[in-house]
Amino acid sequence: MKRNAPSQRSLLHKLVLAPYSIWAALFILVPLAFVAYYAFTDSDFNFTFENISRFFTATSMISDGDSTREVYTYLLIFVRSLKLAVISTFICLLMGYPMAYIMSRASSRAQKVLVTLIMIPMWMNFLIRTYAWMTILQDTGILNGLLGFIGLGPVHIIGTESAVVIGMVYDYFPYMILPIYSVMAKMDVKLLEAARDLGCNSFGVLRRVIWPLSLPGVISGIIMVLIPSISTFYVSQKLGNGKFYLIGDAIEGQYVANNLHFAAAIAFILMVILLVCMAFMQRYANKKAVVA
Image (cartoon, rainbow, N blue to C red; front, side, top):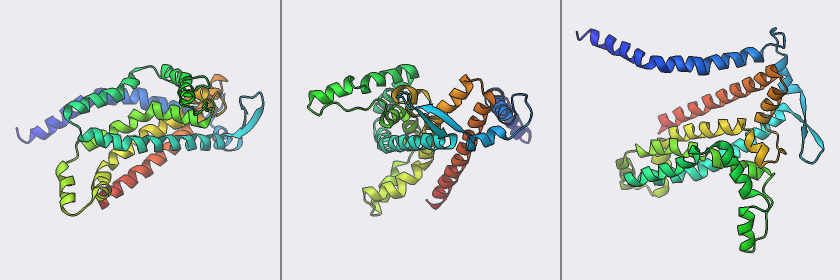
C-alpha cells in the first residue's frame, strides 16, 4: 500500500488539475493558435510572411485630432505604446511598493480593509472608470475647478499623454500592489530584526533584505501592469481624445476594417515581444534571488 501511495497522489493531482488544463487549452492555447494561423496566412489562407513584414515597413495614416493627417509606421506606434506603458508601470511601482509594505506591516484587520479599498475600483466597469476620469480631467472638470478655487488656474490635461498615463495608472494600479503585498505579507519579520541587529540601517534593510525577498512580487506586478498598458486602446481614445494612436488602437482599427490577418500579425508580434521581455525579467529575478 505504501508503494502505491505516491502513484495514487499523482493520479489525484492530475484529476484535480484536469478542469484547469481543459480550460487553459480551450480558452488560451486554441485562441493563440488561431492568432498565429491568421498572422501567417493571407485572405485566401495561403501561407505568407507579408503580414509580419508589413508591420515593420508599412505606414498608417492617423488623424491627430485637428482634421490633419499624420503618417506613422507601426513600429513607431509600438515604441510610443511601450514608452507610455513603461512610464505608467514605473509610476505604479513607485507608489505601489511603499503602499504594499505599509499594508503588509499593518494589523490583520487593517490589511483586510486596505485590500478591499484597493479592489473596490476593480469591481466597477472599465468604461465607467474611464468616463469618470474624463469628467475629472477635462478643462471644466473637477480637477481644474479645485485648482481654480485655490488660485492655481486651469491646467489643460485631457487630450495629452499625461491624461493617458493617469488613466493607465488608475486602471492597473491594483495589479501592482496586490502581488507585491502578497509576497511581503509572507515575509518573516525576524529577518528584518536580524538585519538591524547586525548593523543595517533602514535603507540597508530595504536594499539587502526587503527588496530581494519581494522581487518575485515586483516582477509579477510589472508584468501585470506593463502588458495591458501596452495593448490598451480605450484609455487612449477617451483620455487622449484620439490624438495618441497606440498599438491597441492599430489592432482594433485593422479588425474594424476587416483586415483580420494583419490585425492578428500585429497581435502576434506584440505577444512574442512581451514573452521575450517576460523571460528576461524572470531570468533577472532568478539571478537576484540566487545572489541574495
